[in-house]
Length: 109
Image (cartoon, rainbow, N blue to C red):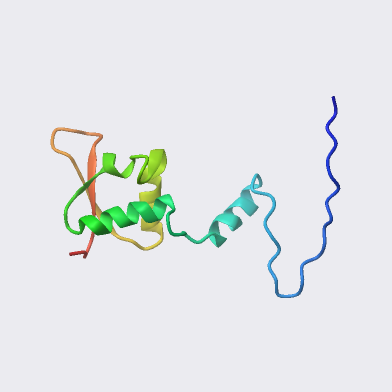
């Protein structure tokens, strides 16, 4: 069975108004969309940052950053995004482990 699509009324944007980004499957426009998106309160990135700030100079385990309440399965990615945004943090491997790390913001506390 063939699905019918609704006709779309495409209008040119007004002068000085940015058109909405509609193609997120296209590599160039998806990067453009990501650059326009500002972190919002309650976002996973903001929750990762809040946890690091709350802990101050105390170390935060990587496993804490990937809990569903904080960063979820992409918590470490959110941490890297914070570094790209200018937040500087330290990292150290946990004793006896090669894959477990701990993190803290530099200059806090």
